[in-house]
Image 1 (cartoon, rainbow, N blue to C red):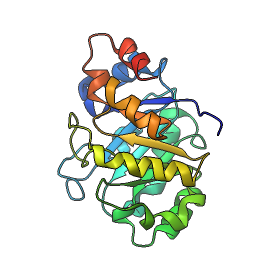
Image 2: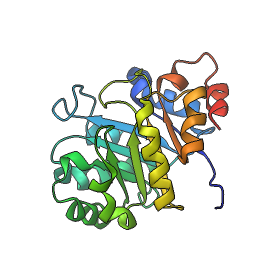
Image 3: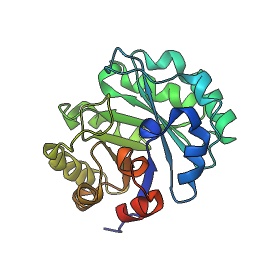
Image 4: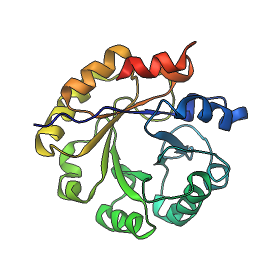
Length: 218
């Protein structure tokens, strides 16, 4: 199997929101994607920001807008417009939804495609792979949460590792992202299991040398 390039996606959840564009600028030249966590205080026990704030970002790298929200389909057009303002294009950016919030997942996937973005589907640590198996061929990215979503700085859940391995065996070329508790040690575990996109927040933004932190994950 051809070895995939490891992509690093800093999560701005751990950045200083008061100077967010400076924070993005400080890491994007050394990163492959910028991970944007959108939380509504309902699906997850935290609240961040919506499309109007995302539209004010200045982001030279492709964005993965991770919607940890209920009824995400109500906001796809808003986020697609916000991505265009922030990044200048949307066809290289992901809108990622949670299987747990989408009882009609195939329809939601088609709706993301319709607004011109790449499709990401996320599942929480307790959610089995078979819940998204029928739609894997329709996804550009699958995001496996390695913590329970909502807050940064949590510990990596080791029991997700077999899920990463199983997904990689089924889909050799799929972009498999992991999000939560990623550091120099857990990154190696995730990559060996088959992940090729590493989402890291506090490990990067909490580091004295952020560039060194990013490079340590590759």
